[in-house]
Image (cartoon, rainbow, N blue to C red; front, side, top):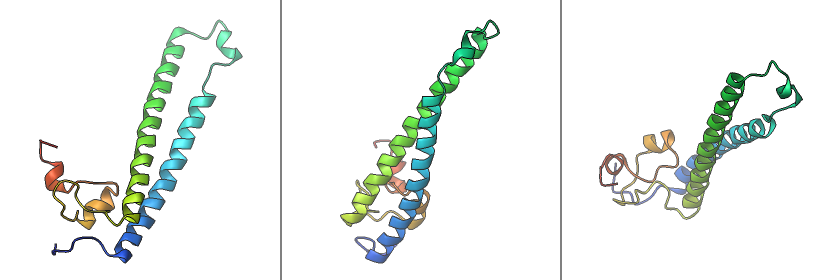
Length: 125
């Protein structure tokens, strides 16, 4: 990598499009998970004698797993939105610790990254 201080406006636009695509997909998944959580309540069939504790326990575990997934997805969406702000501020792709440019390959894999690989692997961070 060169001594480049920041990515060019064209490069930032490329990352913006990548992030917007990921944001659309993440939002769709989040909405789907939330719909599942809202609609997975007990219905009148739950009062039948055939409804047993094992089924109820499995449903509870599934709801809890979906709630955890939804929360993780919400956090991912938040990170992507913050990355868009960094693009607008022209600080996107700059390691927040070292000030070096984060390699494009890393940003394509983890578009919300704020640390270069060296700093990410540093146990002090």
